[in-house]
Amino acid sequence: MSVEDVTQSKPVLVFVPGLAADGSVYAPFLRALRKDFDVRSADHPLALPDGDLTWDFFFDPIDRALQGTPGYLVGHSMGGAIALKYAADHPRRVRKVVAVAPILFPFKRHRHRIRESLRNAVLAIRGWNLPHAIRSLRAIRARASGGRGRKLYDFVHTIDLSDDLPRLRNATILFPKREEIVPQEHADRVSTRFPNVSVKQVPGSHHNVALSPQRLVNTVRKELDG
Image (cartoon, rainbow, N blue to C red; front, side):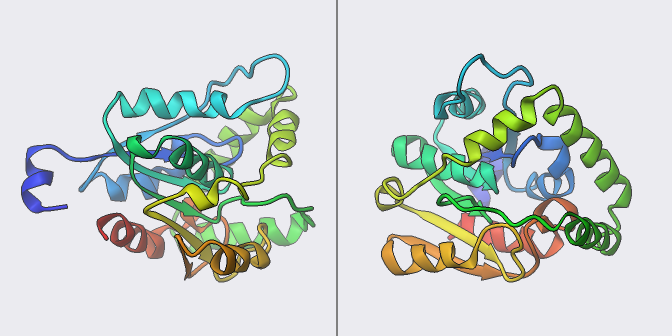
């Protein structure tokens, strides 16, 4: 991406949020990318459809954000899986996809709520983003209320990108060193079985991208420019 390209028209970057989140949860991260990109968040509707969720439900906000123009995709957690799946299904619409701590294959999560909450609080404090963390928690709870959270979790349990990863081109997965949700073996499996996908280790844990993104912003920007 040249300086001239940015000056004339910033390239479109569509961000796909994680489970029950929207763009406001990632405000510091997205704000840091707006210097170089026309950043848009692919927030899914608050009202979920009747019946099971499908990929198309999550693809529609991406289509609306792209507005027919090929762009970059960045996704986090479940949003990372959605971004990778979209790029595999619609390669002509995606210039490059970067997924941070994405869900890749089925797994049983061993939740340690107290430990995870404490780690997230430390991240927010270190990142000088405690007010943002509080607002984000409220936003996620609102979007996960009324049975929506259960439905979203049920969809997460169906995610398996085994048939999609081989079809990707120009795709990077950034896997945190202290990832506490997605098993490390999933990143190792991609590195071993899918050489077309670049897998790189980055500092931090699963929630750094939302709560303390300073170290990740430059890495993501470098991947998008590469």
